[in-house]
Image (tube, rainbow over all chains, first blue to last red):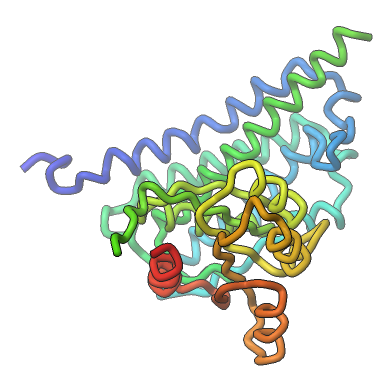
Length: 171
Length: 127
């Protein structure tokens, strides 16, 4: 029996991890051409600036996903804390941070999480925990939620960087 | 009476918590529904009017405009007449239930959401 026949979802989970692994590179590509002031420019719709997006992703990775993954692997049915990104951002001063430092921290944390998930025996992907406000989730579902979150911020940053580029061209 | 296939149905999930919204999207997509999203009440009203979903899951504690106010506006829209709205809430008190009913909700579920229960509720409202 081939590996694929043993678990038809293996390929899907591997693809999820590939996506997560690629996010830091995509963020770097989207932000590398922006000036310091563009990175910090408040979004006209009241959403995060580019730099605030990156800092938010870093803090969620470190304080949310890393902790949740560790707990789900180490404990039986752990309670997984909510991460209130809006509150953390309001209490921080993300626009005073440096892009390369924030992006580097996100990249390291993400790389470690992906490596940890890639090394898991198949049965551990279905380990569970109770996510505050959400309910019982498997590790696989948590990884799917990470991808959804990445996609949302990448889409937002694509729109933002395009808007900044157009703004730069008209000035 | 013929029950519609979930693949034909669009659900508007109104929820400001990323985790909860992603969880509900993924769980309901697994069941075959098409999902559209809003993060606050004002956005929900605008998206409901432009997309006319088959059913709406409305969190109550939302920024910009809360779920009760958004539901009252949706209920006032002739274009959205008859669209079922389910309140999604952490509240369990009976006075809240009366308030939700008065605002125009068809049903409510409490957090954390039991997806099996929610699925049965949705199917019942979509028949």
